Amino acid sequence: MPEVVRIEYQEELERLEASGLGGLDLVSAALGRTLEAVEHQDVELAQLVIADDDRIDGRYLEVHQGLITLLATQSPVATDLRLISALLHVLKNVERMGDQCVNICKLIPLTGNEPPADEEMLRLILTMGRQARTLISQSKRSFEERSVDMARDLVRQDDVVDNLNRECFGLALEIGDDPDCREWAMTMLLAARAIERIGDNAVDIGEQVAFVVTGLFREFEDASHPNGQ
Amino acid sequence: MQGAAGTTGAEAEMARAEVREPAPQAMPEAAPKAATRRRAKTIETRDVNLYYGDFHAVENATVTIEPNKVTALIGSSGCGKTTFLRALNRMHELTPGARVEGGITLDGQDIYAPGIDPVQVRRLVGMVFQAPNPFPTMSVYENVVAGLTLNAGRVKKSKKDEVVERSLRGAHLWNEVKDRLDRPGSGLSGGQQQRLCIARAIAVEPEVLLMDEPCSALDPVATLAIEDLIRELKNRFTIVIVTHNMQQAARASDVTAFFNLEETGQPGRLVEIGPTETIFTSPTEKATEDYVSGRFG
Image (cartoon, rainbow over all chains, first blue to last red; front, side, top):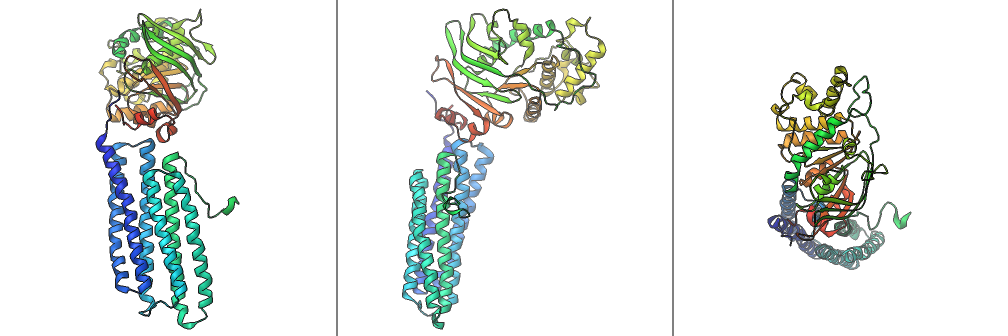
């Protein structure tokens, strides 16, 4: 009977996967606080999110170094190699999603200390943000469970975010006629854009799930050739 | 350890094969560049079963070994990869009680057909062994032309000089030994000795080169030098290499074949063969995945 070997290597790879995917929990928490800061125009909370991004960056560096060490010392191949390649991508997605939260939080002081100027716009932004958090947690679960179906479903979930983003744009044009709302609405458009990018990053993680499982990399949706054109 | 036991007899047989056969044709006037491409021959095996007496060593191996490519045979000890390699130039049958069933062809010619001289097969399908084995009492020069020396009366010194230089250049050894061709081959370093054996093997212009763990006795630098050489030699020969070093298979081969045995006493079987890139990134079979990942020993 074959004897299982390389146990330490396997355990280290599993630890790095858990730690890398754990970065998505950090991002989800950061996005939750970001939405709260937007809702309550809470500048202090926004600054906390900005400062806390160092934790996400630190996770990136730690797991990245661990994966590079495995590549250098263990010569991973086959599924292990695909997993490491995918994790390197996912780490970048995690880091970018953290940065998008920072981008939103940097906008909050720019809108002054007045409460949000438009309830409907605020509702759209918060709904988008909650949907993006769903995407983040689903991308993590699909990776953990190596579920290509769940990963592909991220595209459908991301369509919700994209539609809300378009609604935000239309609403900003409407309320932009009001000089009191204009600056706030334009700032919220930037926030909506940042949330939309977080959704895209979650879909990218789903594509890496499919790569780990199948060995083939295919974009779920090609932004430059929508509808197969 | 059939490899160790078989090596001595195989070495002697190779020496006999080499010395019995004249050079296939007149040597060209100028030594060709080592990288010059020529089409070598294809080996095809069909339902090959190999036995040592009652022991069934390899079961139903059907593969096509493509010309001018390096095909690596990998698998754990006892899986039959070396036995399979030795069947490709009729060395398996040198072991008492050993026999071969099934078909093995070289560019369509059945190498086991009645009337085919195994010595002629071994000239066309050369072998490099695990441990460097230059003839210890011979000089570097004599080692290279060992396959021609019995015919010394028919091969002029100038032709032999050409063969020696061309073969040593082909084996990336010329510059290191050109000033000591009359010194014993056994005085060279391990890596140099192995390149000398490669020079000896290619001196008779074979079609196929079989290599049985050619780097396992060498240090890493000598190993990488041999791997570079293997990549270059595929321009002229079809190469089959048995290796326990999976990274070597990944680095040096174009095609990888994985042999496995389900348990001790069972025959080894070819589990999967494919482009090396595929075998090491997305193998089809779980047994291949487990082996190349080093997950099972």
